[in-house]
Length: 390
Image 1 (spheres, rainbow, N blue to C red):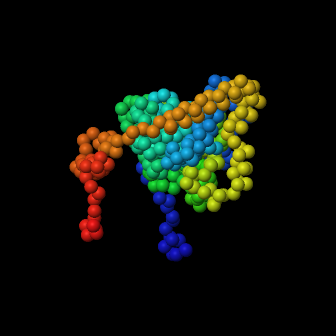
Image 2: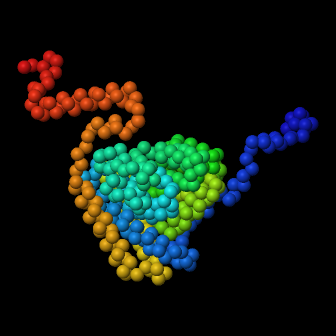
Image 3: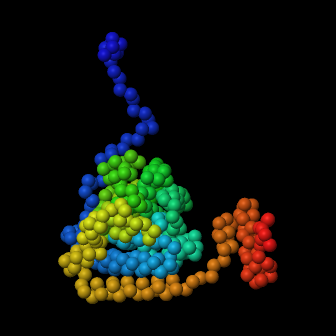
């Protein structure tokens, strides 16, 4: 210690007026994921809700297996399966009211279907037919798209704008653990907390960002613990316990609707299938690991828990599987009908008033299509390149 330090007592810096006075303790999640199945609290919940959750889980599993089969048949270009994650998907859809909005990621087609979207329309993007394949405003489901985390800032902006207009709605944005490494994730949570936007963020932590395990993405105790850094509550839940996921999300939705701001929910689950049909998951995980998670299957957990509580009987189980088979048959029939697509539709739904660049590109494509049509009709000969020998 210098002579100056000895003579001048240390003064702590005054707290700036802009410094928020927030107790971080209520924002912190539990260290263990919340579970409800098998408890008395779960048995006391609405029986119709519990049965619907179970039925949608069974339908969701069948939806995944049928979509995977359609991909192998070449009827889908790619399919990111949510097998093993059905509890997160279904609970997210059922936690919302009709006026609320769902902002899904590319893996969340099941959540859209559970919310009421036609399953064939939900697969339009993955089939390559349309950018979306459905009317977002009609179903209150934002466009499914493959870029990671871009739907989160959209959800925040949408929810904030709706509140400014006086619309009483909540936006629920879904993302995978890999998406939390994107800048859009951090920007969205920062803005949502500052604006106290009515948004719920659901992170489905399925263990891998394609082949990268979570341990190589973050050193945080959990992804839910990141919430305190943004000034919002973090909640950790067993993502294969549909009852617990639904309750945690419903509480977060209620909190957002009442003006208390956003919540970050992390659901611990597992991706049983590969990342997509183009992925070889055996290169980065073992079959023993997958089999361990199969013993924590969300459907088996739900069935066992509800049967032991006297909520579910054999007739309910049979009805759920019959409904699932009807869903699969509808998907097969819908995918067998190959639509006639107009490439010019690429420019029809981008801007109400087309930009000069879009008009130029549309004209170029139209000319190419007309030339191909003329060539197919035999009205012009084959084109030879400059310098080509005759």
